[in-house]
Length: 171
Image (cartoon, rainbow, N blue to C red; front, side):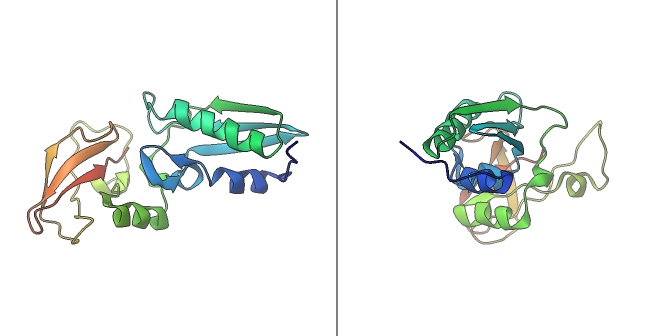
């Protein structure tokens, strides 16, 4: 029998830091900002998550990993609920998490407001942000494909160090 060690929201959030995004294994789901809320009632816990985008194929794996992690810690009734409003944005990713992505070899997203120059809900045409190479730091990069290893990433190429790399798109 497993004994529950977590009894507070903060304890559950700490447990969820062990759940990694399968598409970004260097980042956990709490620091990615997709865990929106945690509610505890005895041995039951509900975790609210917001997908990075509505078609994210990793969400099913993430939901399974959340349930598995919390059941291992003694919660007998774990519910994961998808919350779509407000929509997730890459602006919720902290600078420390962006550093982790860069160190892993993925160019972190540029803040949405920074990429457009102004914070707008709708733009007719979005200028492409300057993406720095995660390997050498050069801004002399170009997008090679809007679609990368996953739908949330694009493939870029650094003209300075001649390395291809993923860029985590801004949402």
